[in-house]
Every structure is written in structure tokens, then in C-alpha cells.
Amino acid sequence: MIEILDSTLRDGAQSENVSFSAADKKAVIKALADFGIPFIEAGNPGSNPKDTELFQVLGEYYDRLVAFGATRRKSMRCEEDMLFMSLIASPAKTVSIFGKASVFHVKEILGVSLDENLAMISESVRFAKSVGKVVFFDAEHFFDGYKLDPVYSIEVIKAAESAGASRIVLCDTNGGSFPDEVFEITKVVKNVLDSGVILGIHCHNDCGFADANAVLAVKAGASHIQGTFTGIGERCGNTNLSAVIPALMLKRGQNCIPPENLPRLTETARIIAEIANIRLPDGLPFVGKSAFAHKGGMHTDGVRKNPNSFEHISPASVGNERNILLSEVAGRAAVIAKVSRILTDREVNKDSPEISDLVNTIKEREAAGYQYEGAGASFEILVRERFGIMPEYFTLDYYKLLGEKTGDAEALTSAIIKARVNDRTRLRVHEGDGPVNAIDKALRKALAQFYPVLESVHLSDYKVRIIDSKEATAAIVRVLIESTDGVNVWTTVGASTNIINASVSALIDSIKYKLLLEEKN
Image (tube, rainbow, N blue to C red; front, side, top):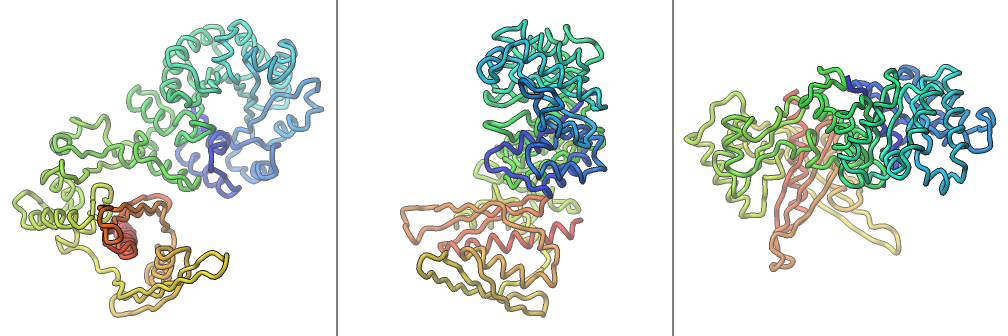
């Protein structure tokens, strides 16, 4: 069994443009706990009022929560250091104490003697242990320190071990170590620690090796991995747990969480990305929307015949799904494969009249600026329309936009829309930050009475591309809108010589697809 500690709320919160509110932190903790992560590092309870308050209201998670903080400061007893004592006062049962494991950092950064550093570590660990805490020791800058002075770096971790730390975690804090170095050094450390101490690994991704370093450390004897769920973190990020967990479980047979929870991996990654207000990278292993995407004709034909031909695991095993991309290199086989996945209750083949109609429609629309390769939701709506099974959720009869800017004030746009649901008409007006936002708000306002689920939907990305710049203002504009309800993510497309019309087309598809998802569920 490989033990996992998630540091999204501490290391992840140090990412650029990421900031968690207290409510956000509670939501992340719940998502991680539901997924089965045994240790959740929730921050430093003495560093700010938000974290101090947070630890007081998470009683149901105290067995999982880990409070993070430094050793006592130099020239102080543990009881005199208020910051250290706030760590100890945390209701969390586990504390993670970090200390310097590099001669360079001890002398140049802390400005203390090597012996004083050892005393700071051993006294802090021993004090925390004496008041009933389970103590993890993070050996900060361990790999760089070991390469500089291996004897002293080993002294540091032995001091923490002797004082009662139950986990010794080796940190590649600057993210500059190579996998072979991590493997060899971890193997040495494993041999010098007592058998009762669990050896851990904590890697940063500055060389792009964080995931590989974690896996190699496990091979060398580590059985505790620290990282963030989607790899976010300071600078280039941390070990990506949403990649390392399935890799170890599915490839090496080493359980990290309850196996029955693994199909919730993609959902959990999307939930956490949504809370962090970041876009989950399409190419993220296992959980990205492109992780099982196939475009080339040979690839799409191969996975249609046997998924093992171009997929290293089943997408369903991690809660993701296969995505057959439509393009000039995909061909009719790709269209049939994609339609078969959408219409699971129908027999579809190359002779189906709807397929010929659909292929011709795709060609016509691509000539008009549409592209369905990255807009699977719009493609599904198109398929259902061609096969006569797309519900008529609503109709947008018209919209009108009014814009005005006075002085230095921000320009606001007002949208007037008229929408119909069956025989009931709604006329609504709303202001927004720009025309698309105004229309989006007005349309949702009109539909809210009929479809309350739309309240959970918002646009997470908006992209505009000019198809032929030589046409200047008469050029075709393609708009891609990515939407989310906090769990699902989908992309829709619109194209027109008018950017507003293109945006509205993509927006309508986005809303219809959410309603389609609700019907499927």
C-alpha cells in the first residue's frame, strides 16, 4: 500500500493565480476525502486567521487533516515560539514539520550552526510527539543537500527519526533532481532508517520530472507520496497525484486509495480544478479531455476494432471517456465510431442514410467556418438533430443589444432577448460585461423558470479565431465556448461573419447540451 498526502491546499495554494477561500478549502477537503485520500495537508494554522479558523470547524476530518509548519525558531524553546505552538495547538492529529536538510541552507538561509539546526529539528519533533501528535518530518532541500554533503543530510533525518517522527519525507524542493539521482539516494536512505519509519517523497516539477521522481522513489523503497491532485504548485508545480495514483495502481498493482474509488478520478480532478478556478489542461494524463482522444484515421480505426491498439488503459477505469476527433484525416470511419458512441441503442454503419447526410453537413459547415474536432457537445447536438432525436428545449426568437460608454466608466452592454419553451414566451433584459455575457445572463434568466439546473452552469473559456484574415472585417469568425457545471466540462462551437452571431450559436448549444446531460442522468 502506498500512502498519499495531498498538498493542494498548501503547495497548490502557492500557485500563481490560485487562492482558496475557507469555503473553497472545505470543498476541496470533502472532494479529497470522498475520493479516499488518507492525508490532506490543509495549511499552516498559525500563519493566517483563515487557516486557524478552518482547522476549528473540520471535526469530521481530523483523522485525515495534516497541519503544516516549521520547526521552532533559532534561540528559542518550543514553548516560546508562538508560531510553532499554534501548529501544536491545531486540532489535527497529524503535524508535518519541515526543517533544513542542506548545509547551504542551514548556513546561508537560516544563519545557524549545523548543531543548532539539528537541535531545532529534534526538539520540535520530540515536543510534538510528547503532546500526542503523529509527526511527519519534511526534510527540505534534501536531495540538493545530500549531493552537497551526504553525511550531514543523513544526520538531519536521523535526528528527526530519533526524536519520534513516524514519516521521513525526502524533498526535492527546487525540483532540479533527475530520476536516477532520486532513485539512488532514496535507496541509500531506505537502508539507514529503522524499519518502523515510513519513507516518503515530495517533489517539485521544475525539470518536468516530479511524477517520474515520485515513482522512482517508490521503486527505491518509499511508501509515502506527497503531491497536489492536479499537479499545481509554486513555480512549475508538484507531483501530479491524478497521474501518479492511477499509474501505480493500474500499472504496478500498488494501491494508493480504495480501488473502487479510482473511477472517480476524473470527476475529482475536475471538481478540484473548478474550485481552484483553473482550467484543467486538456493533455493532463488520465484525466484531461484529450487523454484518450484519437484523430488519425489509423488510430480511430484501431481503437474502434480493439481499444488496446492505441490506449494504454480503459478510459472508464479512471472515469474518463474516449474522444474520437473529427478532422480532415479522420474519415467516415471516425464519424461512424463517434456516432455509435452517442447513439448506443442504434445500429449505425456506412450505408445508413443519416451518415451520408451527416458527413455532407459536416463538410458544408467546416467550409462555413465550423470545426467539430474540439467541440464534441456541438457535434452530439448535430448528430441528434440529423437522426431526429434532439429535444426542442427552447427557441431563441430574437436578441437585441444596446451598448453605451460614458466618460471613464466601464462600458456595459444590455441584452434584450425573447425565448420560447413550448408555447410559453419569455422576454428578458440583462446587463453584462460585454455582449456575450449580457446575452448569456438574459437567456438564462428567461429559461430559469423552466430549467433551474442552468444555475450551476457557467462559461469557463471563450476563444475566438479569425478564419481568413485577408477578408478583414468580413472574415468568418469561429467561436469556441467551454462550459462547466462543476463536474462536467463541454465545448461548443459557432461560426459566422458576425462574432456575436457565432457566440450566440455556441452559447445556445452549450445550454442545450447541459439539458441533454440532465436527461441522460
